[in-house]
Amino acid sequence: MARKLEEERQVEGVLVQGGPRRWGRKAWGRLIAGAALLVLVLLLRGFVVQPRVIVTDSMAPTLVFGDRLVMDKLSYRFHPPRPGDIVVFDLPPQTRRPGALEGPAAVKRVIALGGQSVEVRGGQVFVDGQALHEPYVAEAPRYTAGPLRVPEGMLYVLGDNRNVSSDSHHWGFLPQQRVIGRAWLRFWPPGRAGNL
Image 1 (cartoon, helix red, strand yellow):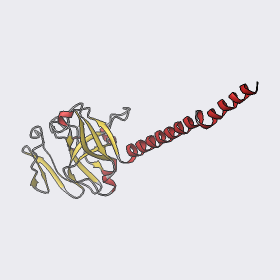
Image 2 (cartoon, one colour):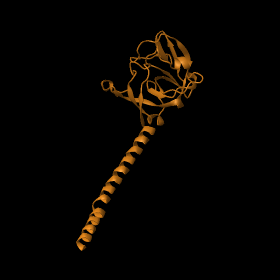
Image 3 (cartoon, one colour):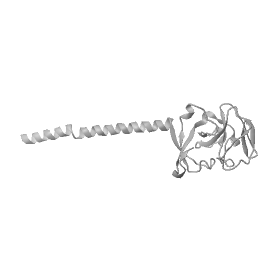
Image 4 (cartoon, helix red, strand yellow):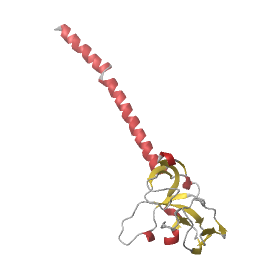
């Protein structure tokens, strides 16, 4: 009987000293590390970077349907968008049909900033009277627009696929506060991966 009691104490001792309690510490450590990783991912996604999928060909050939990119949400906290930047933005209200639900964010290239004049004529885009060199466009625009002066706090944005893009030449200026971030890196498909 004393031997059986001693064995039970040893078993209890092992359970308390090395078994479940040690495993419990490891499990808590893993749980805390997992929770910290989740918080880090949520913070990064919320404030620094976010993945996006291209759902139209309005930015072809630069970005095409199905491309996946990383949007930088941080840089515009330190400086405003610049001409040539590819921005991701919430569509302005004038782009939506009455009663339509708010759609996904759009992606376009910044052409002109507040205070600049912009004009599209003869298959060329002019900013402050100077023709832009645009090797990234699918084809020359077959429309005219302007001349217009971009109001302060606004942007003039166009898709690289000028003749099929719904952009500033259709719906007007983009309020700068609607910009969510800058298209920074294409990561899919792998053969087209790289900085934008």
